Length: 191
Image (cartoon, rainbow, N blue to C red):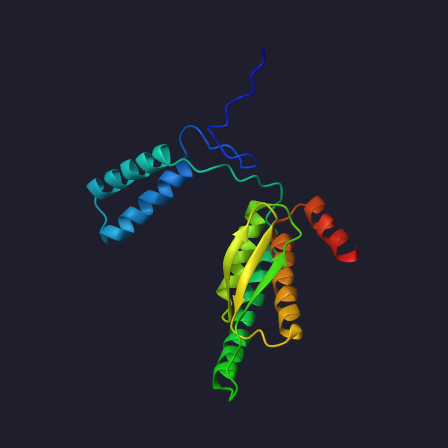
């Protein structure tokens, strides 16, 4: 009788947890440990590595599948556009706050087109960094982001927010997505 391999008790649809050592995680946690202590000594480095090892063994991270590749020029363009969005959104928030009519907050639902945990997370981060909106929920099962926006007056404002989120997703895929992932995104825009 063939039994399926154990996934470590993962919820259906979730990637299985990693088993074994996670060197990158251990090093990152050790660096955080050193920064928290505020000084560099052999004892702090060793204790940071031990804490990182303990955390990565007790709380292993699931694998994050990545089929794409880093496109440095697109990534630089994405960062520059993010800086521009930060400036424009900051001005817009100030204008909204100083307006004689009070802003009307709203919750907007945006269905993403990519089917990747990594791209969903990066899109949510890009959107949340820009003032005036914050991701309040991200549903993995439906690849949907729910955002609270500062001023959701009228359907045009809500459509603008949806376009901005989809633009952020497009930038993430342009920076990191594989050809197939980018092609699926383009197909989704034409249909």
